[in-house]
Image (cartoon, rainbow, N blue to C red; front, top):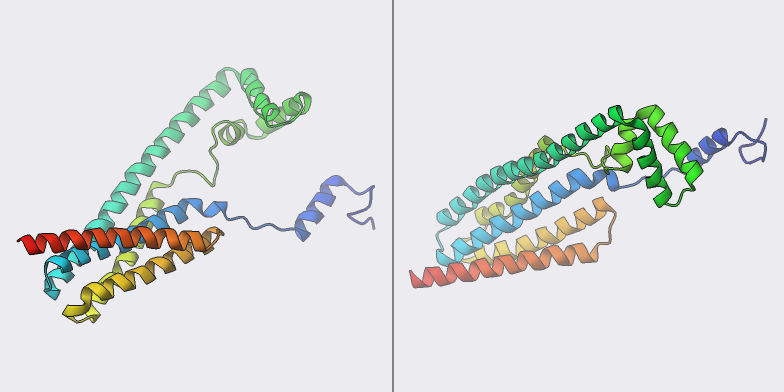
Length: 248
């Protein structure tokens, strides 16, 4: 039996053997849902905690603070869902329009489209003769898919999914808003502002850690980034709330 590493082995079989022994797990397929999840949770924590601190700066009544927090959670979750759906739907509409145009061009002038695809590969470093052969073979298999991926940059990984983005954002916003609300419920009136501020910073740091781990990135920068901006938002909102409360 011929070993996959011997010179006379079938290149295709050799490649399959190498893939079995060298399996790569990439994280780029998580981009779509990870972006919506991190954005939703981060917004849920910061906006809810900031509003709670703003109201706490103006009023020490626990009922008022809790009501403001719940309203912020519900309104924010609906706003995130609607905003993500509209935004990602616009992206999806653009992708659909581009694919329809490409489909027409493939039907009307296939030779020009083959040349266009070959030129893309030449620009990437493939020699012209090989680039034309690759373009012909890929178009023979699925011309629209080849042009969508290599000309338009549309693939299974990057395809817009409006409903998925909307539900992910709403769910993660709600999850992010829950910790500040729980802190309001569990903390005596005189310590709500301090408790929510410190608890929110811990939650933001944990969120930055989770986002970094899920995305395969370094940990320190994401944690510092999300914690700094959260602390700044809460400080400004609390200061405004205190100023308004004192004035009124």
